[in-house]
Image (cartoon, rainbow, N blue to C red; front, side):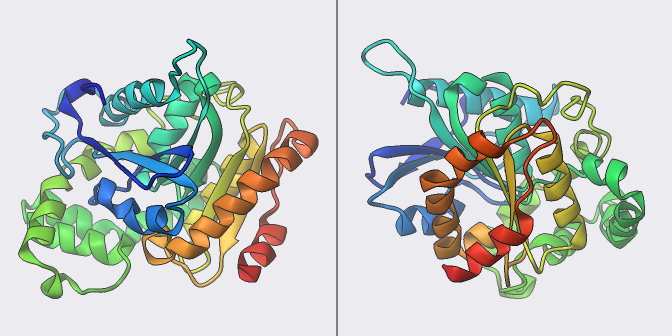
Length: 302
C-alpha cells in the first residue's frame, strides 16, 4: 500500500475477492469495520483508513477543510485499489458511516468512474434537513446545545461525553469505557465543531445545483429506525437528490448500526449488490428512487 496524503493510516480485513473501501464515523477508527468485515470475510477484502485525529493517523493541523482533506486521502486509496495490472481501472464498492458517509459521497462526486456502488449509512449532512425539514433540524440543534456549551467552555471531557450520549450506541456508558477509548474520543472531538459549516451550511457545495448529477452509480442509503428522526429525513432527502438511489430503514438499529448490527448490514449489502444495483439502473429517475418501505420489509427478512 502506497503512502497516503497527510500520513493517513490504512489497513485491510478479510480475503474476499470483492474490494470494499470503508470510511468510519467520527470518534472511531478503521477498526470499527471489523464486525462487518468478519461477517463478509469470504466475500470482500475491506480496506479502511483512519481519518485525521483518529486511530493511527496524525492530528489535523486546522488548515484546509477537514472533510476535503480526508476525501483527498480516500481518493488516493480508491485509485490504488482500482488500479489493475492491465492498466484499466476497475471500479470499487465504497461504504461510509456518519461523517465518513459524507466523505464517501465526496469521493464518489470526484471520481464516479472508480466507484462501483456507494452505500451511505446515516450520513450526517444536516444541510439536507435544513432544506427539507428545518423545524426538525432546529430541534436537533437545541438538543445539542449542552454539548456546544461544554465545548465552548473548554470542558472537552464533558463535551465528548455528551456527544457520545447523543450519537453513540448507548453502551458501555462513559465511565465504563477504557481510559484509552475515552482519550481517543476526546482527541477526535475538535473536528466536530470545526466541521459544523461543512455539515450544517454545506460550505463545500455538496447540495449545490447539479453537484450530485455525476453520482450515477447505484447508491444505497441506510438509516436506523431508532436513530434520531433527522437521520431518516437526511437519508430520504439525499435519495431524492441522487440519480439512482434506494433508501432502506434497518429496524431496531440506531446511529451506530454498522457496529451494533454488522450481520444485518452485511445482509443489506449482499442484497444491494446482488439485485438492487440492476433494479436501480432500470428504475432510477432524475429525482432518485426511494424504496424506503420495501427496503424496511427486506431488512426484516434477513
